[in-house]
Length: 222
Ligand code: HEM
Image (cartoon, rainbow, N blue to C red; front, top):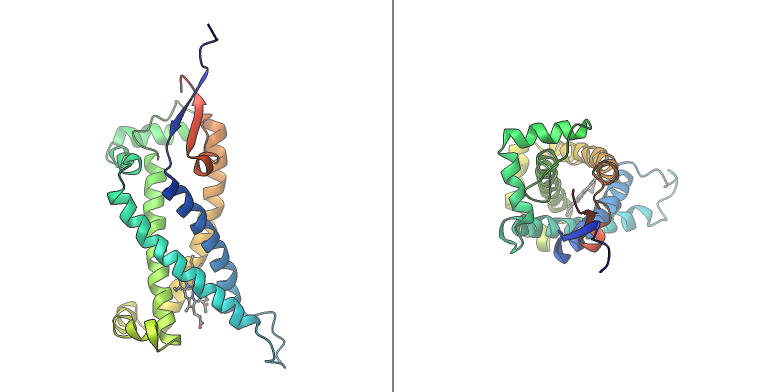
């Protein structure tokens, strides 16, 4: 007879969640870099316009902008309707004050974090906030798009864009909100990567690896 297993593994992330996670990561990286460049095109010398740098980067921004928009909608759908309910189950912890206290204490090295789903309550609410941030940056992006490209899809979105622009207090505000949210994404990504690595070490669970492989390896008694 072999030794008893010291570790076990749980299947936590479906291929769809993993693929969309990394596609979104790539899209956000490209969008932040190209977005800041659109905002301040520092590579173009003032005395020449004989260069395509700005238009190529704007094109990349739009391609990845539409990729992010599509993923944002699909992820909202999957959260509610995926056959795997591991994300939805986390909501039970959000509704329990006890789980919040356990969550916050565990971050201060007091006790373990036992989750009903895949995310802790603070993590869950952070992702809800980020999902809405993504929704708003996509909507403001599409409004900016409709104001630059008046034909095709831009034209189709013209009326609704006008309405959204009015609700946001004018086109300048649409741009400013789009820009400020870029900074919110920058701050989120730094904290997100830090927490992913830190939680893996703190709770001895696979954390970063699981969004690649789908599996959470951990000690049998954790
Ligand atoms: C994480 C996602 C995104 C980030 C970080 C981002 C970032 C930015 C930034 C910093 C700017 C420059 C704003 C300024 O002038 O100060 C910008 C402009 C723009 N973005 Fe985004 N963006 C994102 C998503 C999108 C999406 C989803 C779309 C549309 C599909 C989009 C379309 C545009 C357009 C059309 C402009 C204006 C270009 C112009 O000035 O002509 N963006 N973006």
